[in-house]
Image 1 (cartoon, rainbow, N blue to C red):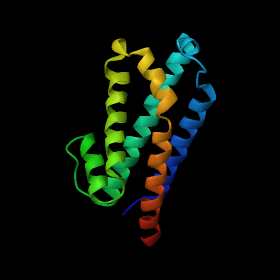
Image 2: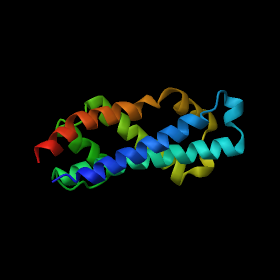
Image 3: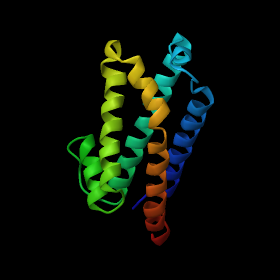
Length: 143
């Protein structure tokens, strides 16, 4: 059974991270390269993506969609259950890979790539939330 409170708390946390990130979004690549701006953006992106992954895990476990062998399996299971679209599954895999770059290959982070993600991929979070809210909250109400 889905834990409504935990799902909603994760969505609230994600909203907060995204709100903070939007408040500090750089207007130019030169502004982004300032160390404080860069590190703050990287960290907020990281925790936002981790929140999305945690939310996927909560949903997979709560709906008893099976035990994932790895994080990518979370997205596969959500797609198979009709909770997210195929394109969203691919976007989530990309997010997870990007998070791994930020966390595990920190010295090799490409500043231009992070800046471009900030400029072009922020809507991925909103689309994910919309898909989750449309399908999962209906299931929560039924339980």
